[in-house]
Each structure stands twice: as structure tokens, then as C-alpha cells.
Image (cartoon, rainbow, N blue to C red; front, side, top):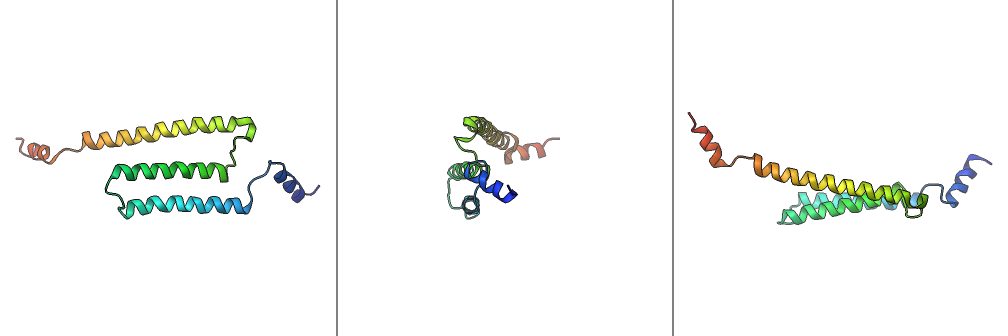
Length: 126
């Protein structure tokens, strides 16, 4: 059997990768899911920054799912669900890291940035 017939054989039995069409769909979805947050932030679309951050995070999560499905080919059928279980654990860790990072950044801004009054008080010290 030649190499080309092996790859064709693998694609028909689920061992191969996606088609050019599926890669293009994944690429287009990825580009759209990247452009929308840039437009939201650079265009200052929302006055509420919390809403904008929530939408950016949600679109980031959707983009992760697009990458996992279209480029990594992880499905519920693959390897009897072990990939999905490891993926679920990874998603849990990502949520913990992202929410912890936002929490830390918010509190650093709140606790570390001196107010104008505090700066003036320090300037007047002997």
C-alpha cells in the first residue's frame, strides 16, 4: 500500500485529521473571534468595562473550543472520553488561573495605587 492510500484509509476510519474545509472553517471562526474583542476594546463600544471584560472572556472561551474541535480534533468519541476528561480538567485550571489573575490585578490596582491625597501627604513630610 502506498503512503497516499494509507492516509486516505486513516481519514475514513477516524484516525486522520480534518479536511481543508474544516481547517478553513476553524480559521475563519478564529479570526472572527479575535477581531470582535479587538473591536469591542479599541472601539470603546461599552461604557461598562465589566460587561466588556465578560464578553472578551466568553469569546476567548468559545475560541478555545473552536481550536480544540477544529485543530486538535478532540471529540467525545476520541479515546473513550479520556481526552474530554483531561480537557475538562484543563478548562477548570484555566478558569482558576484567569479568575485569580483578574482578582489579583483588581486588588493590586485598588491597594497599590496611592491616591492624590496620599501623594501630597508624602510630599509634605519633613
